[in-house]
Length: 144
Ligand SMILES: [Zn+2]
Image (tube, rainbow, N blue to C red; front, side, top):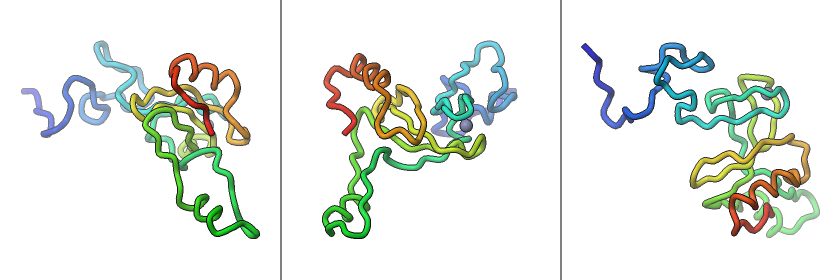
């Protein structure tokens, strides 16, 4: 007898926890998709394609920091104002259960499409990544 899925669970895609016996990282059985509806980011530090269970989100990337000597408005903006766009977004991520290093990722918050990842030390997204995003999102205004 087949066990029924809990209410609200999608049955059109495999869940790694109740249908996918190999678990994360294992080859899926025939008929199962490898991309099991999880966010997968390639860590630019170690090259591993990590799913979201291995990653820690770190908020918006490319924030301009303000500290001592800044105005209250500048510091307030740095502390509390975030873009939170519907569309292309640049984020900080840490490969928490891998190499442990921080990196940056560009993805679409509406479709969850990942455009690419790049080192955390980058002052701005790499030019080839920006060109790739512009080619896919004609109305994109740029990362700033
Ligand atoms: Zn890594």
